[in-house]
Image 1: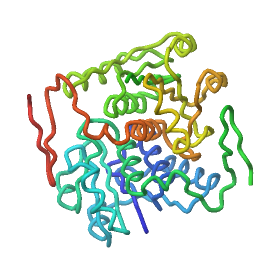
Image 2: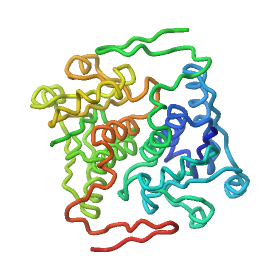
Image 3: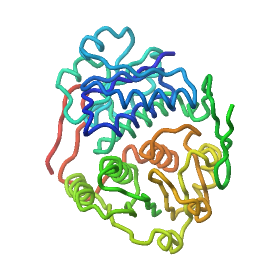
Length: 171
Length: 171
């Protein structure tokens, strides 16, 4: 199973934290990497890489110059998350058959041809909310909740769940 | 059933978009309102209120001066979302018995006594990711997925799901 995320139209000033959250959610919920188009952002890449170094992987983050070519060149199925698409709860059984998946998430304005380039246009509720939340929910449904206890390789730290307070083990 | 969200330590410069996403996720996934502490932010409130006006409610957003008093005064159970807590998938059956719920989500640094004030400290994976994603996942599990087709009152627009493209009805 290979799941990749493509984040479209990153802008350093405005999207720094949202794109970071998208990258961290991609990793935590079982994707193998996040690619992003728009402005190349060394700070974004550095912060994701430092989380991978501390908390484990594998996970990669890479800038993509030509996102159309990237989508067209992807061998598996492509799912675009959009509030205008078909409900995730209806389409997931079909999408889940695909073991090589690219999940496309937009920025502020998504070019119209993304809807054509994607195999699926999928909504996580038809309400305005957040690409971070949509991505997490989609991955959670795709993984059937197994991502919640996913183990990461080469982690330097690990949390020991507590009823109160914090316990972190250095490995 | 009443679910409220409390967002701690909002800072206008840094958290504007993340707190907006938290507010939108709260509404879309079935909470009745988001309260927030830290800096009072008229732009944040305005943007949430404009979504409620267009896409329906009920949903409210309010600034809270004394968040400790607010938590202590809340009649129902309080769940603090933190990567250090007990796994959501283990504790949800117990939490779901509560029909009056306050979900507390932190900013960058959460004061230590939040762990004591909360009835539950719950993790959505023990990995670093996003309060937006944690909130969405938690509400999704609490609602058993019913929030995905939630209807909103007094909406001025509604999306008609499409395989490709966008269709919005003005009501």
